[in-house]
Length: 186
Image (cartoon, rainbow, N blue to C red):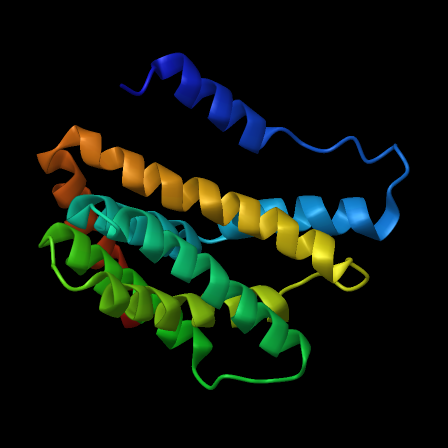
């Protein structure tokens, strides 16, 4: 059972601002910038939570494999972006990820663990490329990656855990898909 105190503690930890008066330079700047980056846009929050939600709804090996595939592919997209690899229409890919992952959760789309992992990885690649392109100048790439990987893990985990709310989880998936359509429209 998810306890309200646990949720409040998580929200306070995520909302806490760093003490920038302490030394740490680019590493600290990179980690905290990366930690907060997924929360800078609803598209990232929605897609990552929906991927976890879908994985949790399908259950079994998918509840673990799909979030892991998402994280791995996001890291690969990030590395590719830092290497100068550009993906055309990355924002459209991100918006499509919100629609598709939200709809998959809403309708409880079932598929093999391997195929679902590939779907999650495809969409996560767009998010990783965007994270790389939006990394602040002077930030340490490894620290930045560690920060956004931690936040992404929390969002994926929140999605998996949300299946405990039963039907509400599927309704949330439908809301995510609708938000994705709104992102595509404008």
